Every structure is written in C-alpha cells, then in structure tokens.
Image 1 (cartoon, rainbow, N blue to C red):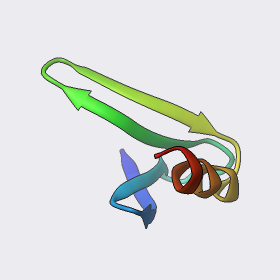
Image 2 (cartoon, helix red, strand yellow):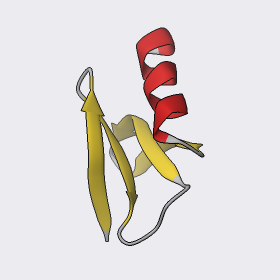
Image 3 (cartoon, rainbow, N blue to C red):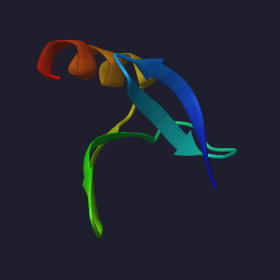
Image 4 (tube, helix red, strand yellow):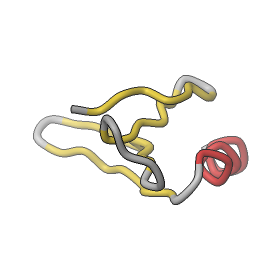
Length: 53
C-alpha cells in the first residue's frame, strides 16, 4: 500500500506505507505500463519535478 507524501505540479510523491528513504514519482502511465523514478529524499524528488517536468 502506498501513501502520498506530497503533490508538486500535479505529480504525486509516494512512498510505501510505514517506510522512509524510498520515494516514487510516476512520470508516465499508460495502458498496461507505469514509468516511475525513485528518489532517496523528498527534497531531491521535488527538485527533479520542478526542473525536468
């Protein structure tokens, strides 16, 4: 089960419930696939979203 930690520019930063240190950002989703990136901190995920997406 995943929980949403933060929403930046419409992109959700999620982590596995009860864990710390692994955060996922879904970049693209389609029929039958999901492309996501993994980050070690929330700060690095936010910086990536603001610069690249």
